[in-house]
Length: 282
Image (cartoon, rainbow, N blue to C red; front, side):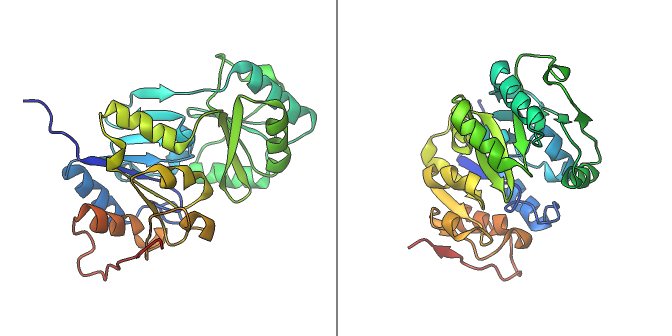
């Protein structure tokens, strides 16, 4: 007999949604994800994080079936570690962007798998490196980091507005999105969290009407709009909440994912913890 048909997909943003502000994952959230998997749902973290950013999570927190990284640009199977999809930026555009930022001394992070390069070390970079317990390599010329023709993406923080303006005016095959306050993720044009979810749904032979997406920030809006059920965490900006079908009562620090699993998958998770009903969008 073949494997049982999956019931649907639970697609979860990480930061501000499935993990707390200190980057740890609540026990109720872990339990909710495992129960969803047992009930026949495909589970995925859909995040702007790159491979290197996942170092802040312990193994117990990697409790989903798939990782959709780079805002939808990369899909990894957690069990086999196989990369199922990876959309990179072409070398020509990479060199243009890096050259522009080097010439004007604008901070630019190069992110490719677990490889991490920066053109300057700032206080925020130093703090993040300590959180990851790893250190980026410093580059001063564009050719220093290329061992292939493409990279997965970039990140700009301190100078993100200038970097974003250059991309809009000069790089039609590159896009960016504000992934947290004062930080943009830069990737190939056409990438989005919803696009990554659709690709995973096709791999798992799931229809889009069985997808529940949960997020909290502006880079989650497309998946909240297009999923069969789009859920915004209580800690989301008002503009994000306005795009969701449902807004949780619980924040990311209160296991909002567990509330979603209880309400929409009808699986008890928070028994005795005073689970709330949340509110549907009017």
